[in-house]
Image (tube, rainbow, N blue to C red):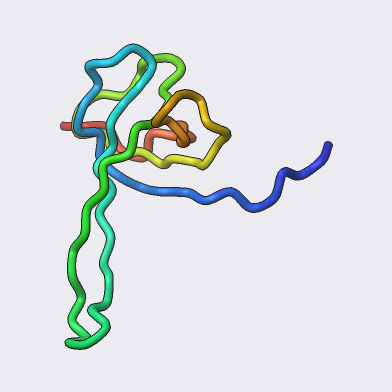
Length: 85
């Protein structure tokens, strides 16, 4: 089987599950400020494909890069790392 190359992964928390087979994931990251050398928290909302509708709000998920599935979906759920309390 051919390898498709190294795919990017993201880790985040599900913030919305209202759509069918789609979730919105909040991805937080630390970025070093170029002048002040201080770390800044940045957050990004990403739409991801959830084939079985098994993710819920508050779940910590691992996303993997994939081909464009719709106008805004370029990620899919690889695994659920932690369930919401």
